[in-house]
View (tube, rainbow, N blue to C red):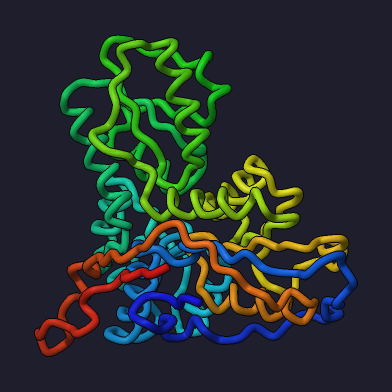
Length: 358
């Protein structure tokens, strides 16, 4: 079974959680053998690993508190463990004392937020995922070319807010395929689409298909905006789902890619699928009559949380684990430039973060 980047869990994030008072899952009789299909790839992606390590290293270098705008990644366990180490999560930069250190989350921010931080003389560390930064640059480039931008994404998501902030006058948000008919554009022959990085691949392509029916000259971005990790995790759960009576997705409610995994599992054949943050949220009735359980996790989930799920399922008789691997991942992102050198000015040995392996 795989572990997170660099062979170990990020410091402070492997702390076992004290389970709630829920009775342990029972080993109920089920016709035939019981098993777990464990999706791979799953869990941490390179951008998440980079962002979490950025907060840890900022705490190491500068001491607590270090402020973080929004959740560094969308996972309640990760946020809780970083808070224990001295990270303070805020909604806006105006909540941060003048001159403090602030980390921008993996989801990215708008230029306005960057300027607000500068105005408060904050020492900013930009932990935006490089794949999100790529989308920001596309938006800026298309705006300079006087193109109208259709951004496929979810209203209110931090990544969408950051991307729209790079070209606010030229960007229209498309929430879903059903929104296509109500989209109003100025010049249907001068359109390009881009997307949030954590969407359902199938739903995004359906949105694009409908957009192109209305606007035949709609242009594509130069490359896929949905990130490699989101796509890989969806491909893996598609393969698992067709043979699963139940799919359990470990991930938080505000994690777009985790929520999409539940939807994809149901669409591709799972008889039931549930999202949980922790193993002790699994309900006994979910397992009634279930012979095969699929397990995966969103791109911001530490592997320790998956292991706790597997341990609980083993207690319930699901001790046979078959890993279903659909891709290998081995990607590294440099840490934010502010953290690539230690306090003596030498390049830090952990100056690269984000190696993932399935």
